[in-house]
Length: 326
Image (tube, rainbow, N blue to C red):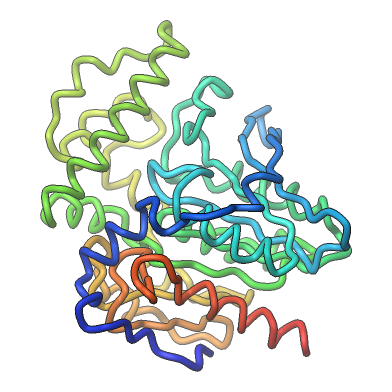
């Protein structure tokens, strides 16, 4: 359980300030030893799918463990929140692995198939392979937003496909209902819709450039809402009959987490502009699930002192410390 509440200065409690500045560069100003130590790693998993990541190993001392980080939708291993959290734990003696989901970061050329949010198997296998690099050390997985959704699905798999040294999973502002989050992005401040659409369209253009014989997205890139583009791209996903079936494959509301048998900590905020808080209040109670709903924090923000300090990093570190102390 978290022992502290997130209470930033009153002027820094605006959810949009927290959300926007959580992804801006002032948060990571100064030296980043974790990024300087990073080397590229390509992890090959099911059906020869290759996922790009970056590992940062401790030098001159044995690592305390391994922290694996998964970014959100249209983020990457270089997203500000990953660079911040990675640096925080690297300085505390952990090896860090920043994993890119398929078609994120500079990885569009690695696989012919197109990314979608239901690619649980390949992501889980990548995490298992990465955790196996330090089999004698404790491993922790932290996912953000859509990456938090992936992390929760990996937690559900632990009953049948356990990762031996994985100790706990953390999900920061996880998108439990992707349909509702997509609609929320479209309905919230125009800056969110413009941000995600711009990055998504850029990603689709990169994929098309890598595989012009497979993809022609030009006729659908005129859409001005995330929901409109989602519906338009469904023909490229013949395994799903429509967007609702697609979203249902990775929706985690209702009783989806009832079978959870692995320790998970969710940190989210009541004022999140793109993830409805009601989804968390209706989750089933479980001895394995610790949900911390803060009054403030926006989406993957929780900045204090604003805009450089990060509250959830300290909370995660305290949970890990207590578990390691036994």
